[in-house]
Length: 391
Image (cartoon, rainbow, N blue to C red; front, top):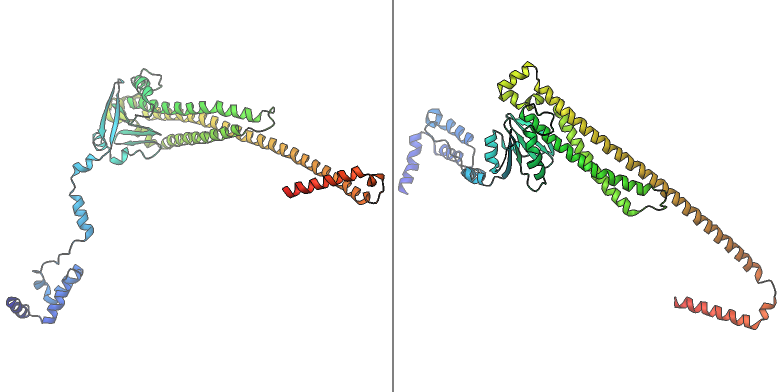
């Protein structure tokens, strides 16, 4: 304590400043103030030569910084261990099939891609990254390289028959593909587009007979009333048809987006950039970008045909609904006419009864003196009163 007291007394003489200035300097160097303010105060009080030996006021770490420092120390192996695992099916140029599992981090590193490239966020997309083609068609996810085709997570999708029976022969050039003489990526793209078109065509072929059968039953003139169960079936089929129209529209827009940009067509020709011999052939007379454009236009026209067929079904549904509404209006008019006739008949009877009440009491007959008739009238009145009181 004595040393500290002596230091407090000697410090103003050593520094050459009054004690109040030193107190102000000490308050400026506290952690609660900003470093620039503290340093400016030290410079003003001590001068630049004397302020140089002073240490820069060390700022205490904030809670957020401590948390960031702790999270940065987490080993990368822990983050890699929780990455998703893809079930990959690989098809080479000869149609050979191999299946394996690979972590997402390892897969995009092997393919030379980024993590965002394998997210498959859109329902239908065709993109190129680092001489790779990334395609998604609803639940089908694929990556095309100049040497192979990778199908990701095909299980529980009912794709086994197409994957292991039809696709290998198509990729090997033995299937019914237009591009069997062109490089591998052409055959892979055509096989995937053909599968998607066949899927949409299959949905339309299932819906079309159901909708036509339901419409025939509803519009049949033999049936005077509308079957509610048929209307419910028509409503469900109409929803399915709307979903199909949306899928076809997305497919067309994805292809049209590529057709509108020539750079994307060039990027889809993978072998043209990876194999110089193919580039020489293309310069000799085979334009691969033009071939890719013709391929995409062909499937765009097929999708347009499906869209027209779906649009015709929608028009038939709308026309049938108009006919059903007309029939319902005619039945409603018949019921209203019948109700009006009954009302007029009841009013006429009531009018005649009122005339009988008005003039019947002034007419004399021998019935008033008939004792059995009076007793019968009394019994009828009594029975009516009892029935009214019981109700």
